Image 1 (tube, rainbow, N blue to C red):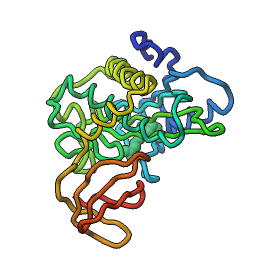
Image 2: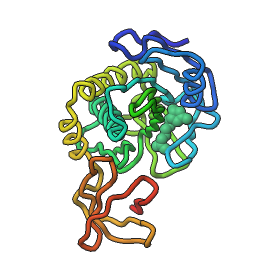
Image 3: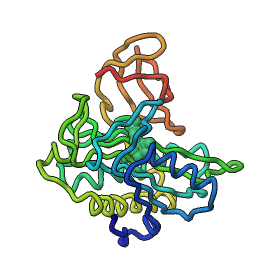
Image 4: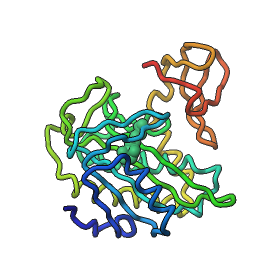
Length: 253
Ligand code: BTN
């Protein structure tokens, strides 16, 4: 049984807990097609049988250990061309939440929005938007946050218990995370776009450092400069600037 998330202002006023499901994002997507739910609906689960990651990847979990949650928001105030700002807001919210437990300088946002601690991934975000006319309608924010899982098949993954040595009460953690999410969502709603972009760039993984990437022409040494106004990654390659969409570049380090 879940505890009611009473403290956030508008997120979590309605909460659905599922013992297991295929994917909380898919559950929410089929529910919102059938009924007009208010902003703030939360669906979370102990275990996903086919959790979805970015780029068609599968998101694996050990049952009962992690935050596997979808949040419904209605960013009708946001232009379609600004939808990447949702990823930014969520990434910044996770950082705000994490800094209560881990030194801030250890935390980075890997473009577009993986949250890393000391270069290891602790949280993945999958935002799925639906569009009405030229505006965003429903936005399903999927958050997979590794909380109490102690071992992973991937050496590049970590969790809060690994990083702190402490176990966390999941529902309390979710409640605090929702408060941080609201904090940044309200900044977005209030039009504080340049502040959000500045904070994002300050936390951007490998920004200003030479590293190895792959694009359609092969491997190269490049330097991340930031993101452009559509959310594409700007990388300097052989003295020229290139703007990459999500499937057009891979990080090799
Ligand atoms: C990534 O690849 O980094 C994104 C992972 C997103 C996983 C979360 S878990 C809750 C929600 N439901 C899903 O099926 N995926 C997201």
